[in-house]
Image 1 (cartoon, rainbow, N blue to C red):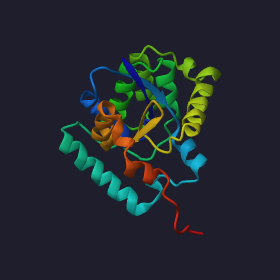
Image 2 (image 1 turned 180 degrees about the vertical axis):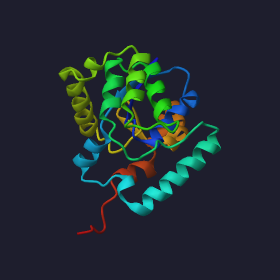
Image 3 (image 1 turned 30 degrees about the vertical axis):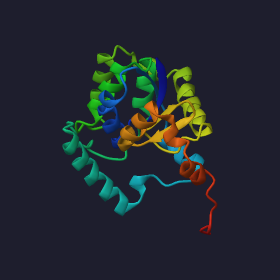
Image 4 (image 1 turned 120 degrees about the vertical axis):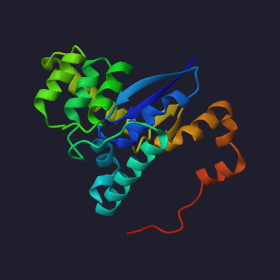
Length: 206
């Protein structure tokens, strides 16, 4: 049994859609769920978030709606996006990052929920048997910070990212790429891949 680490942020529609495709991953693969703060990764790499670029935001929202229908996955954007995911990420951590808690929180938010609905959040926490006080514990907050720092140190630049044996596979559409490499590591070891890994930068934007 091989274990891959899945880096995700609940704010990402692509993470939700990637999770919905886990049934397509190899049957002998175990998943370690690792919540991170996407905003922290963006800050580390000096990037803007996709939703911070108006044209890109519109395209991504429309694409995600189409892609979910294409996959046959129930999907509806929350009432506002982007939203602050901290409480939800901490809730998952307080629930020990169980697959059930990850799936439930994603399903809750990506079924058209209001992320700012305090009563809805309390009901969600109660459903997961997590006392609200647990979400505020320093250890839970620090674990999210550590997860984000460790992800950046491992080269993770976006969510969702599946990591196994030092290789990173980014995005909901990386399932086929990952599966191919999983059974044939030579996919990333051929001459052209090695050339791409060392490809020089011909011009840099100021």
